[in-house]
Length: 136
Image 1 (cartoon, rainbow, N blue to C red):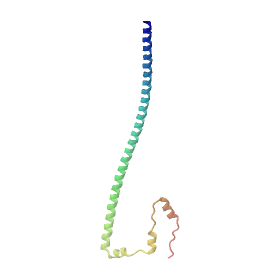
Image 2 (cartoon, rainbow, N blue to C red; image 1 turned 180 degrees about the horizontal axis):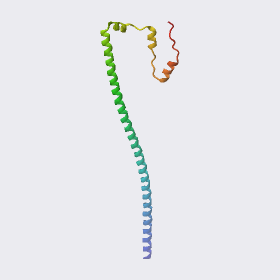
Image 3 (cartoon, helix red, strand yellow; image 1 turned 90 degrees about the vertical axis):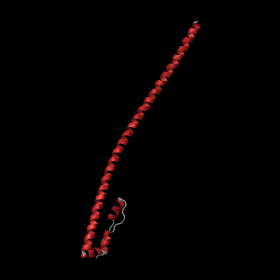
Image 4 (cartoon, helix red, strand yellow; image 1 turned 135 degrees about the vertical axis):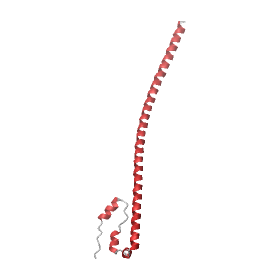
């Protein structure tokens, strides 16, 4: 009987140690999962702030683009009005019509010609090159 009680106590002690070990492992796993969860929350908060900043930037860009289109439309309307005024004046005034039909001198045409510039460096190079005016 003492042997049976001793065996039962040993079995209970082994079971208690096994449960204690499993409980310790479970606490360790929970701690790791909480750390991972905290890291994920921080990453999500960072991404959320980036999305908010991007949204604000998009809103600002959209507003600026709308203003740009409005300015372009206004400029286009002013150009149409100016061209219409020039056309009306040219049609009404024969002296002005003859003057507008006259070809510019070659020297003036050369002054107006510029190379196609695609970069700032190209423009600086064109400015630094010597472009002497022809002798009259």
